[in-house]
Image: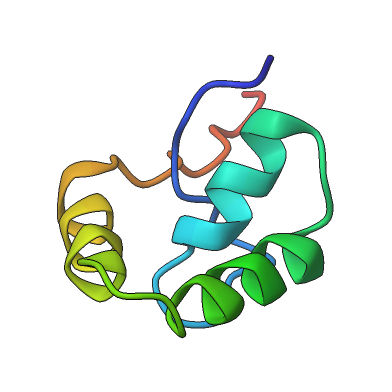
Amino acid sequence: MAALVRPRDGKMIGGVCAALARRFGTSATTMRVIFVASCLLPGPQFLLYLALWILLPSEKAAKPAW
């Protein structure tokens, strides 16, 4: 499993769905659809997204080879 970090590429808003998709081996689109569908249910999904956006570290930029 990949580390849980927000990617620099492939993100739409905060990169949380892309990070979760990478972690669980699914596509980012699938994770986004699951998130939007879960927002129709009662619960703190939006607050959880905001918390993950704040708490998950951003992926570091690739260092130059020289």
